[in-house]
Image 1: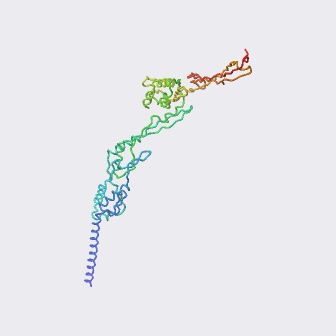
Image 2: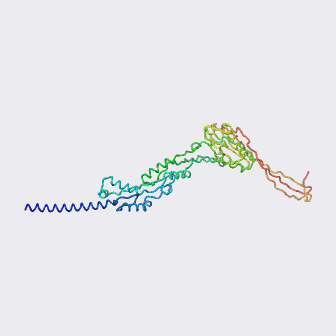
Length: 405
């Protein structure tokens, strides 16, 4: 009986060994077959390679990778996002290198023929390998820089109808091409098409709002009669109006004209320059010479306003009045000159007849003054201009004998 049990045990062991051997051989056969295809949990840029051989995977990635992973490089600026087609900057998916990366990764882990069994589990999303052309990318960034760099905007003061409106400054930026190339390269090396933040350098304004908040007092004014075509003056006056001179900055009208590429005549430049010289001198700015112009030796910025009023050029200088209680005003006075009456005798009329040949109209004298007040008391009143608008008399004809001598 004991011998029989031993024999039966041997039979069972042999059968179990045969089953195990069969399973192992089958597993080895399946593993060998699976070794030629990719595991079910491998994805490249969102494209599944489950059950595909090397060539099949290459074909599938060529077809689906652009749609799944992206056809454009995304670049990020502070205020907008840019989409650049890949072919414009020489970007292309390197599919052979991507598949080689997957194979190396699986082999380096020592999976051998059992790599599929061991690798199965959580989804593995592989970033694709990407090639790019640095020269094309640099050219594209230079093009973007030319169009998208944002200059700083100085704070401004708009002057209209004796009212000052303060406009805030704005910081600009310039794209740093070479720093941005490094950032793009870093992103592409990771298989990412962005958004890649472009590296920028901030451009700060020359004049900030806090710099000019104290500019509110008129500290100088000058007026000149215009004796040339107004169209010749307008470009200079337009670009001069609203100009701010910061402390220690130099200023000349010729500099403004050259920077703005203004076309002007010598006579218009002379007229504006003379008027500006008087206004800035009143304001206390230091005159250097004809080429350098004035230097703002005050502790506060000054604002230049320029306008054409009728046949007059008016330049006002605003700043911070440092003398306590002092106020400078621009005052215009209009004086009416009533029409006179002229009576003429017409012998064709009867003594009772009276005919108005011309209705009279008043004339006017407009005078502009620079008025200085200290603690409300007028201490100076300087005539800046006088303009006469003539009227005409009333003319009446009457018959003989109507006028009594």
